[in-house]
Image 1 (cartoon, rainbow, N blue to C red):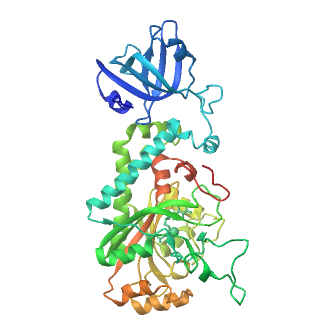
Image 2: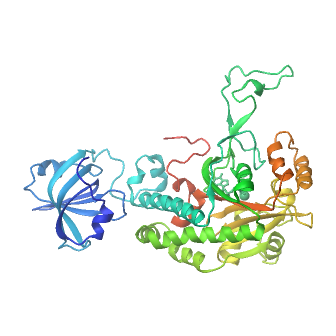
Image 3: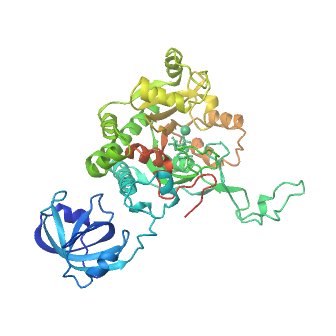
Length: 464
Ligand code: 4AD
Ligand code: MG
């Protein structure tokens, strides 16, 4: 549109001095009264609506009265002080162009409260609600805060590939990528799938993590980070798992586990404080309508150091708590949701970093500690969302890494490039991965990760 459009966010910052302006947006509410009609307009730039006053002198007043909630309009008028309560200023309309009409009867978003489950079914329209407007503005802000944080510290933003031949986490959760005709898959004489005849000449998948490539880059560039989509074909239908999610993965050369934890803590704090300082009205809305206590919790996260406790001590704390856990507390177990909640919500009442995990329960690349029982791994756990970050110091000793890969049954041939970085000028290095969807959950108070991403992908779920 050739007319200069003022964003509602900008308009609301201005005094109502009668200046001409044009607002464009979607109608959230229409209240016809005897001599005029009040229209609430939202354009996504802020959670606040602009009030438009339409009076019968408009040529198309009848059409304006008939248009439904959800219609899109361009309103040219004067921005004046409002006589009514509820807003400081309002737009007295001189001209209203109905850009795209919506049939109010059929429009799925009525001006009332809808359940998040219902809104997930109409995810193509839910960005027009207050809640999802707030969530996606905050999601965008967290992405920007991520680039600011790492950029300010001299990290190089690198892109790791999405198509890969290696399962970084070794959990066998890779989606396969193929161009083979599934009805006539080529077989080897031994009767196995002949991936040699597939597109890449080998078995390929969607990456579960950009870490291995980030390591290669860090061992030349020093400090790097990746921020991109990752995929997991695990069949878990939980409120914090997705099949496709974005991960932020910093990797640092000349760095040990403690430096890694320090960075994770600083980064999380930077994310939360960005939201607290720049998204007050979205947060106020979420606090009131979605998650009571959200702001206080975010403030605690920024104000206090995170608790740091070894895996061994976590077991001791849980054993001596006198609590009966559904999953018994034994050396080697993975921390389950109930354990994470107990630690963050009851025992430490805030974020917790757990480090030095049993080596059997973790991936091949983690550095083996001197006790030969544990690896230099760490997870950051948060109240409500549980594990948000997983990271480690990496095994930089060639011979130890070789041995570990053999234990995990990994072929040295496949990982020749990974081993090379340890063969030539190896250095201690460390990094972590932050689940971006879970960070959005934490910052917005949304209980389900499917409501923290615009179009969630999960088992049996691939709409839009
Ligand atoms: O703990 P994970 O599996 O660690 C890694 O992938 C490492 N390679 C990262 C690294 O060191 N560079 O995953 C990291 C984080 C988790 O802590 C969690 O927040 C998130 O990614 N995550 C998921 N988020 C949504 N849906 C899933 N299915 C997720 N799986 C992991
Ligand atoms: Mg993990």
